[in-house]
Amino acid sequence: MLSSSPQSIAALAPAVRDAARQAGELALPYYRAGAQTAARLWYKGQSSPVTEADIALDVFLKEHLSGLFPEAGWLSEETADDPSRLEQSYVWIVDPIDGTRAFASGHADWAISIALVKDGRPVLGVLHAPIHERLYEARIGEGAWCNGERLALDQAGGTSPARVAGPKPLVDRLERRMGPVERLPKVPSLALRLARVAEGTIDIGLVSANAQDWDIAAADLILQEAGGCLTGFDGSTPIYNRPQPSHDEMIAVASRLHPRAIGAMRA
Image 1 (cartoon, rainbow, N blue to C red):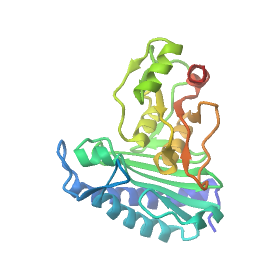
Image 2: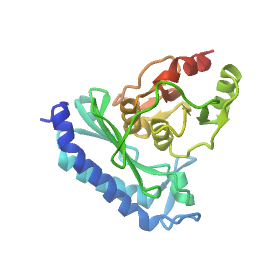
Image 3: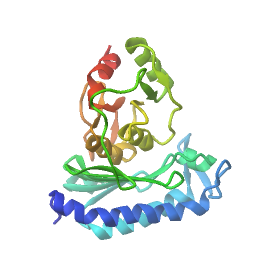
C-alpha cells in the first residue's frame, strides 16, 4: 500500500506526469485551433458538452492510473460514479479535459487534470495544458513546478491593482469592497485559472458555486505548494471525495492577499 510519505509520492509522480502527456497526445488529433473540434459532440443535461475525446482520454487514464495504484478509488467527470470510492483512503480524481467547451470551440485554454487524494486532501497533482505546452505539478510538502521550474508566489508585495479573473458577478462584488482591480479575461478551464494564480499571472481567481472535485483538486495542491490557497468565502479548505463532490463559491489567491480578498467577498 502506498504511503503519503514524500518518497512514495515522488516515486509515483513521473508515471502520472507521463500519463498526462500521453493523454494530451490522444486529444490533439481532435483539436482544431479557432474552429469546432473534429470530435463528435453531445450534451449531458441541458448545457454540459462532452466530446468523444473526453471519453477516449477518460478510458485511457482510468486504465493507466488504476494500473499504477490499483488500491485507489476513482472519481472522474466522465465515469459513472462508484460509491465504493467513499470507502477508500486514496482516490484518483480526474478531469480528462477540463474546459471541454473551450476544447470543442478551438480555444487553447483546456487541460488534463489528475489528482491523487488521501483522506480528503490532494497529495499529488498534475495539470497538463497541451496547446500552451505547460505542465504543472505538485507533491504534498515538496513544492510545485511548471515545466520543471519551481513555482513560488511573492509573499512580500504584488501588483496594484490586483489582477482578477472569474465570473463577472463575483469580480463586481470584489471590486465594490476592495477597490479598483484589473479585470482579466475569464479562463474557461477552471483548473488553469487556479494554476495561473499559482504561477503569479493572476492575483485573485474567483470560482462560482458548484465547481466539482475534478475541476479543482489538482490545481488546489499546485496552488498550495506554490504559496497560495484555495478556500470558500468562509475560509474553509475544500474537502474531496465526499458523497456530493461539489463546492460553494471559492477564492484562489496568494497567501499574503487572502485576508483582504476574502474579507471583501464575505462583506
